[in-house]
Length: 190
Image (cartoon, rainbow, N blue to C red):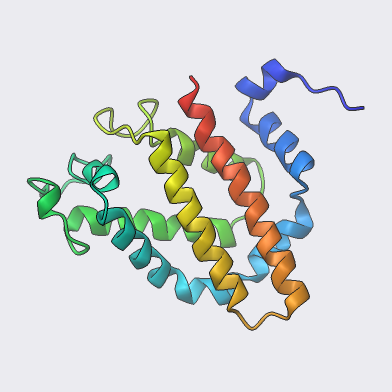
């Protein structure tokens, strides 16, 4: 039986990641499957981002978070939720972030810097980072992660991979997204 330092799980992101990865079964083989899928997912990222933002802008509970100034955005702001469109400069700014997120998932080494990135993604949607005026409720983050997971699973399922490789790749992404979801949730408990 392994001994886990539960206090350290809450204070050390690397230790937390290593525990989760070991428990879930996300290791070098799964990371390699995700990276090998880059030629299939990369060309579809723009489409996935567009579909994601169509969904986000279709609900006032998610769209409202794009009205205040986003951290790092310097352009004109929408006056209200009604002024938001998929082509508004602030939405394009956010789309660029989601595009980079997908690129990080498929193109980055799963090392200590990636752990810091996954943790930062979780923290930036809370008062702990980013804009203090924008706090995305956990239910909205869970909805987004579910949407992203479904989109990635569909991309893998409809790719030219054989059935065995497709299932292995879907499982690898699923494990990674559960780790990401934990790195989101942890910042809502503090």
